[in-house]
Length: 176
Image (cartoon, rainbow, N blue to C red; front, side):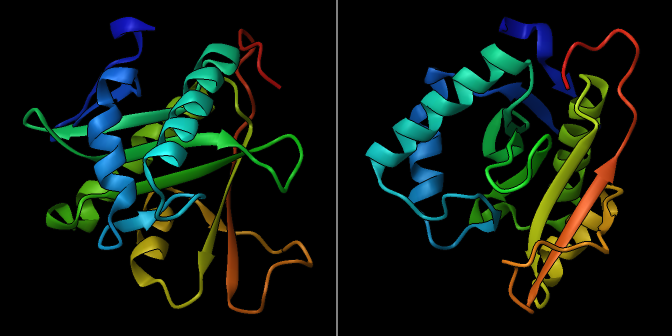
């Protein structure tokens, strides 16, 4: 991977996760005070290491995955996609930011960038589960161009919204 997938936006730098990011990721995932949603939630070092291995394997297998997010060189979070474990043939968009970087605009910028990257890489459908009362996540996913999906899986509770983004895969893409 190297710098091939490095993305620089107006405020942020996104790089595919790597083992050199492990300590930052462990601290982030151990904090209950983060904003955003990762599928695994708050976890210990062992679970963070397992997640990192899964992230690295996803990058290698599919050419998409989780990015580290930095602002002026400082680690502030994660954003990216993982293959969905609940809906076949799609990926889940996730993000989380450190407590002192609780800026909806930064979360939206990172999430929008990760979503666009996934679509450009050939992922045609991306979903995200959001609690109806989670205004920040709704602003971030909606601001990234996702919309509430009218067809929710039955296992979603009444307070869970399913967001999705659909885009036709480019002709050159080999995913899906």
